[in-house]
Length: 300
Image (cartoon, rainbow, N blue to C red):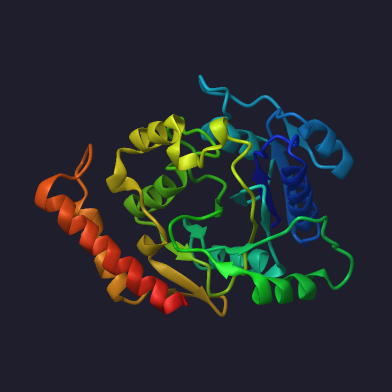
């Protein structure tokens, strides 16, 4: 039962972006039990796919900003894969064999699920070596130089192939759609599994020069549009809204912690639309600050 990893890479025009995306694809090809699909027609992608010997699915639907759409990306991956498990992964992510092991472990314990997790941010500027022993080298470097990213979102999403067949027309590479994935799985009553205790997922740091105006994705109009499509900020779920942890290849209900309680208060204080005003805004700000302070203290 292979796992199919699929992604819609950024253009390969920026030398650093091109390097880390080639690193990522080579990394995935080094994992056992994994197929890889690339989606899109960005500059340099066809050449990279041919160089690395990876299938390329070019006919992806796009929005008015010419950005590939999530439903089309997911549909193409499903159409061109026979795998029981699919995983959308961002094109700058590196994984160890524990990622594949974790995906299969969750699938053995749940029929429908979503597996997500925190990432470790790592500065990478050079082509990586995936010759024998690469797993040990990557783990050691991530543990020595990496920094655990806050639980605000996820850079990988593992799910059964029949899941997420209907989705709003989210733009890839913009904020909001990843949060909606967690929200949607929760509304369907599926286990939403935080793989962080078992999966060391490494993000290769980069700037935002590939985006319009060089702005972070959450500042773009497309991100605001994604949030509206998702149903507003109340649906912007994070890893605080997971239901289970994956530890020792077993699913465990997440414990009730103060940061999670404060996060529930945040969601309750958020208005259905627009921005919080008056007393609600003050309370929301205080709850959010307290939650972040406690979370940062535990991760430091």
